[in-house]
Length: 65
Image 1: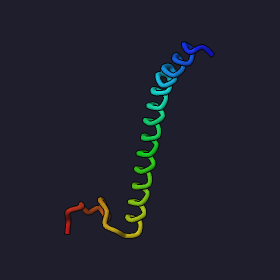
Image 2 (image 1 turned 30 degrees about the vertical axis):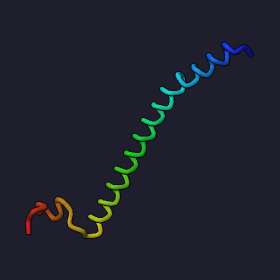
Image 3 (image 1 turned 90 degrees about the vertical axis):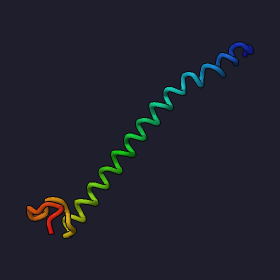
Image 4 (image 1 turned 120 degrees about the vertical axis):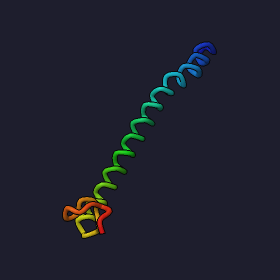
């Protein structure tokens, strides 16, 4: 290989891969956030179903005694 081609590869590969890595990072971050929200909602529904005080339980407001 000629040295010009090697220099072009060394400079071109990061330029091509950086946007790909950025989009991949954003997708993984979005999936992580979605899974955390889903797990949190499921846990809250479980607590509420088990009898823990939750909003709207028996028609009462959250601040009622």
